[in-house]
Length: 130
Image 1 (spheres, rainbow, N blue to C red):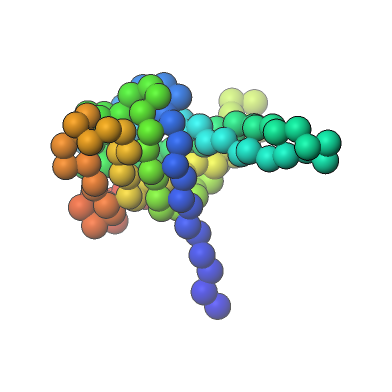
Image 2 (image 1 turned 30 degrees about the vertical axis):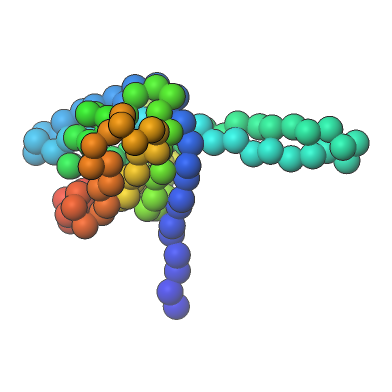
């Protein structure tokens, strides 16, 4: 049976991306995206709550993130969720779920970016997996 692992987020970057390079020379960009949920309470009061999403981009997409993303930029991110298991020194396991970006569209004013769309066909290959 088929399954689906697809995420679509539109939100603001909370801080400049952290850029790393793997031992194999592939770039990785890590950043956090903030989204908001607006709702009305039973008393009719309008409320909002923020959600923060850990995101990762690889290869050419990471290079674009390094070049164009910065704090407060509005961005569309699409692709999949990936959960990593991190073994801590004390033997405990830490689970970290991230959105792996395969399509990223920069949504700020048109003049702020040039050629602002890069999708998974342009940026990912089989080595882009964790």
